Image (tube, rainbow, N blue to C red; front, side):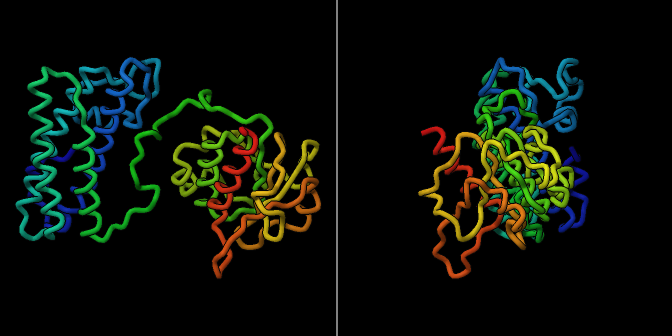
Length: 320
């Protein structure tokens, strides 16, 4: 973590950009400490895999049996107190910067208040972990104010999610037999989003056509938020698709999703963003085609969004 004194010597705009990066590290640290407080006693692997916590709490070492850091209650409390003290000093610096936009300075003043209170509360509590959620929100507010002031609009994958550390694939609740074939999806972002949605709805396996984007692509990894490592997947030419349990496609011109009779086991085909499901793939759809009714003039949905709607309907039909 950059010393406040060094940060103060940077040029104003550079200082604001750097402060946004520092607040990202702080927010991740605080989210890790708060989650550990809520799940105290569990063997939790945090997304802070060493760097942030080690910089703030020198001497903290990963447990040999875990790839991440296991934060105990005393360490969680110390992490919150140390982070709060640092946040208070950082906020004071930014609030006093007359070159900074007023929304940034106002957010900094709020953070200074919350950080000072959190640091004092942690100290008086004798090292017991406290509730850092209000402090996290103040850190997040200033971070986004700084991003806006410096022209850094965040993408979806830049958002910090406390539940996307290194979850255990064995904890997934899978719907046996629910498989999805992705035919020539070109966008790595869409592919990653589909992986994330597939994990959320318990898809057993994703089958990727040879021309579908690469799950290991940085954009896929970012939008998947760790789901590529959770959902089993493999490449499969369309000719090798096993339709013994039934195949259907999500495409225009089919039966309304509210009336479609979903199978308990089967394969759903999702077509490419540009051309939809191919005629060859449609010929394999023994169960027909399902469509999402739309009222807009464009009558179009992003492929990953449409997939989410489909999976909600499919799993809902099975569960009910």
